[in-house]
Structures are given as C-alpha cells and as structure tokens.
Length: 180
View 1 (cartoon, helix red, strand yellow):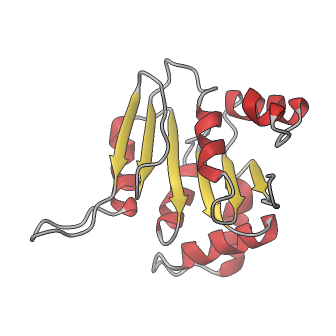
View 2 (cartoon, one colour):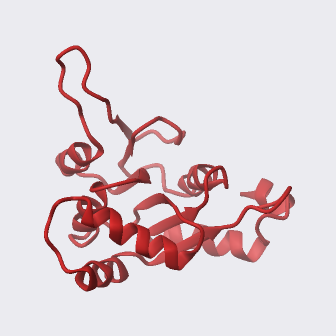
C-alpha cells in the first residue's frame, strides 16, 4: 500500500480508508479497464486481512498472491481429456463447505455474479472481487449483466437492488498515461 502512496496512485488518507474497509469487513468491488491494476490492488488489500481468518480464493487464472496462513486456493479449469470442467460457479458453490471468513473472487466475468450475490446476501462479509468496467456506473451495469448470464430469471431492477444491498464499496481505478 505504501508503494501506491509513494507512486502517487493513492493518497495516504485513501490508503488508510481502503485498509479500514477491509478491516471492517466491507464487501469491495474493484472496477477498472484491462491492465489498470485491479489484481494489484486486490493483492494489496488482502494484506490487511487478519492472519487467523480463513480465506477462500477463487480464480479463473491464478493472479492474486495472498501471503496468509489460512488460504484455500481454488482455480477453475476447462474440460480436458474427458475430465469435466470446474467453473467459477462450481467453486463458489463449494466454497461454503470450507466455512470461509473471507471470499476473494479474482474476477467477475459471467453467471458466477449471481452466485456471488447469493453468498453476499447470506452473511459473507469482507469479500473482495474485481470486474472490468470503465466507470462505477458501467461496473454496476456490467455486474447486473453478468448476473443475467446465470440463466436465473430475475428482474433487472431486483438485480440492481441486490447489488446495492450487497456491495459496500466500489473502487474505480483509472489508468492514464504513466499513472493510475
């Protein structure tokens, strides 16, 4: 976090506020365009999670490197040589069996957004996830569109209400030439 402050990406006050959000178990969505630092910020935020908490990390491709003693890493895989695929949705559903204190979802890309919303609405606070979007408003709309990809019939307004009820903080990262 200090490196981001020194680079001018964050002010010291914003860095402290972000660390407090994690400490206070706020559900955080990090939104930004490709290669803007979403995974980097997610990595940094996980550093403030207390060591005794059980963390389940779910990713499509490994990218988040949590240096904590109680981390369960799940990675999706495509179908290979007759072995069935394991999707992010499968992993989110299996996560509850591991009694996580925190769930870190590397990136929301599709129907797993619905499963994440279900987890967030059942008392799993302190979740951190990322999403590709160019603004906060686009991020909320993209999250809702991903929920619609789940195949579950839910009115769009109900999805947006669930998102508003579930997320506490949306961090939008903007990349400009040479800075974030």
